[in-house]
Length: 272
Image 1: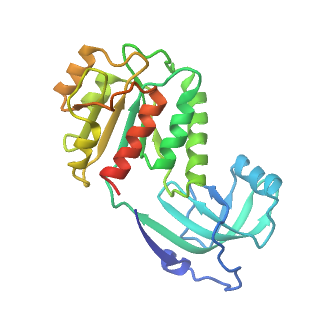
Image 2: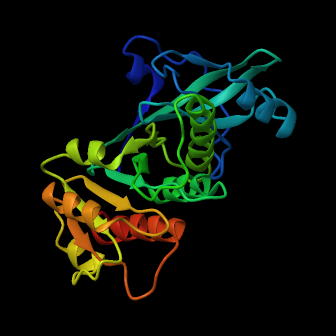
Image 3: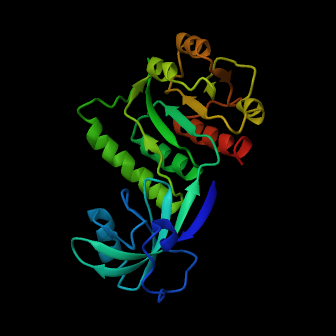
């Protein structure tokens, strides 16, 4: 991912920095997510109660602390805290970075495993650089997120993704979709993308063979089935929609292992 660094006056076009008395940059700054932050302005305000608690009560940061904020537009800024109170954190923008998209998206459509392990999948795949995560409903999916429970689940999943992006120094938080049936996901695939469909149905090609030949400018969708795997009919339907059936090797992997390993292979073999 490319990165362009600008001063705040360049980002705004008309608002110059009023002071140059900023602390020198440190290597490991604390990072916070402010979804709607507008870095074209000379200052930003954090109102998220979780982030305020983290800054004020956990880290006990004070006026003059240098931290980093990133927003939902792949922008991040080094800022200096100017005011800390119960309702908001006020900070002055020092340097703005706009991360340019240089690679096509990596999309993970994964059947959620039992025992809450989908959060673990979101966390680790966010760290690895996945862009979109789709909870996948198949014929054998045991964990189903109903419409009435989805808002609570989504809030939790988004929090996991945000925290993983902060920890891994990503400037983009992956988009988490509501649960979607396999046929719906297949019908909405990008016709120009690569769509790999691992299963245990004795496919001759290993996923690495396919990824090594992949076009780096095209999006990659990874399908991960539930415990018990995809059914033969689901594999046939995926192939009909242009998916490439692949193997993940000789051993049978758990859902979370298969998801993390597949995303890691995509990032290593056909992105980096």
